[in-house]
Length: 489
Image (tube, rainbow, N blue to C red; front, side):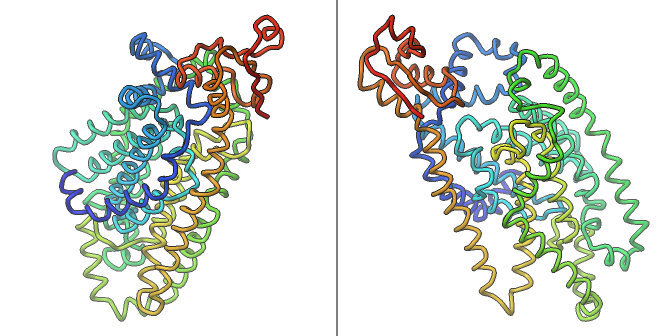
């Protein structure tokens, strides 16, 4: 199945990969960010002490794949930033391909899925997940979680040999839980196809517009029956849900030891409704909002001339409808389903992160999963736009697509790149000074948002200098006269 998918869609997969590489190519010349060093050092320490130490660590175990991933890169390439960023870009490409593969879901479709993946590849809103090595946990969670989701879709479609696909879904769900705590939200996302069934017995029909279902086979009763067929599959999600219950309990039992419960990253009393709403608005601006307005207007105009379309193209619509009933990959696109799925996916994807209390918006790296919904919204909009303007305004789709591409890539190459280079400066300058002098260095001033461990880990990993090379107090500086003084404000 995977081999045939790649063979049949080699060209779209190549285009998506090229877009992702072009968008993030400047990242390969970027140095490590200051807080990358402690994570890499910890991954090395786990390899030395034995990975069973990580397995017994209740705080870091939910992010085990991050440490394994980082150590594998370090073991193969050493402390080369380009290697770590290349691995992130490769993961991003794989995730874009998975988003395209999710087009088998009738609520999305492969046509919209391709444009969704293309937009996702260059979208600047979640760029921190790719441009920051330490944020690879978002990429890993998405990769394993989406693999599990696709196998879940196949399970819902199949009538024979179904349990193997359910087993594969559960198997890949486990490493998603070992990538980040927020992976539990995938269980809620897995429930969406139950309300928008993808399977052959009803998937194509549910995706047809309601007026067409009613004209064909008595609409309301069939709609209720098909929705019932989808919900009948809900008990098969029980293994995923049960493992999540045990997983969440283990996380909360270790909350006293976890920094994430004490640095305002997760506070149940936080104004989550403000954070959730603000993050929703930020994600939709600008292209998401434009797509939403366009889809709404096109949907209204479609209802106004529905009667004339049925009369003029009745035979062709009937033929397409019959194909949609029996072919889950039919290209008929239901605007309402696309919009609902996109917005619901975004809203659910935000839930694990809306309890952050140090700001009233979700950090951009945490929007990586939710932005798949934005991609589907953009994909559906582009498909409809190309169909509506195929005859009279042929110039419009290429112009708009060029604007989307140039805006996102341009922003990544300029504004975002500058931000990450600036974030790398404190440790980069300290490393440069430590490389030029022998003896201790008095760190007179260092950015307050960066811990002492960031600087010490940077010198240890890059220059192989011990942590006591750095002096952090004037009293110690008087006891050990420094060879140089460092100050970054």
